[in-house]
Length: 269
Image 1 (cartoon, rainbow, N blue to C red):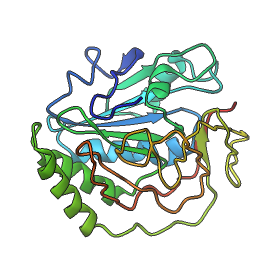
Image 2: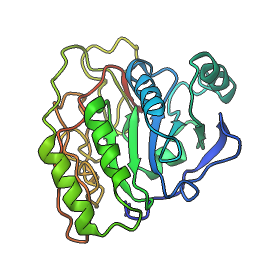
Image 3: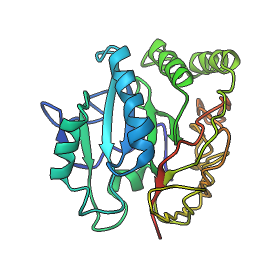
Image 4: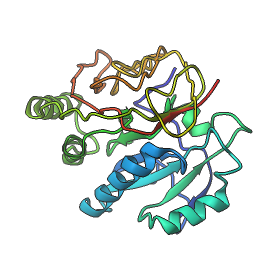
């Protein structure tokens, strides 16, 4: 069972924009924002990558580490490591980018280990290395920045009750982000999914992993969206539950969450 208190190390086959290979263990003491994307995912191009660039520009890198993870589960030939190098250069990505370790034509290793539903996915780790948020889609900029600030304020060894108190304060302060009208295009990986309404990407992505990622997401742990394994992302929910696990009997802090972005991708079955 996935344990957000001790999340798995990243399984990657290479790094771009990094002087040396990075690990989550190395990045402890900092808040880590990991953005999983694909070059051909419209939601990644339109929303996730620009958002990650804004975060990199506004947060001190010695306090908040922004990293990209290229998780390819479709069109493998078109999204090769060589093509990614060109993409990273052309799009001027200012942060390190890891290449998720492939498993043939299937779901890459890190995506599988973290039970991601597709791209874009955003993971937030606190200074102690615990996974605190797991978003599929596009979190609101202001809400996301507030959550990162809350994690940055916490000490690495912050007691659970102190961390929970900060979470409750953040939840009380934030209002639900306004909803945007438009087509929902997410990229999901296999396990049952229909690409939503009107995605011009030409994919009919499917994913049915068993989790219900849209409204609540339950990994067997509570860390940010009821990540259970009954997670069927419809690309339609107006908000997600963002829940933090602070103890064995976790207090659920529900924070209005990511509105589905256009261009999200899910893997096919």
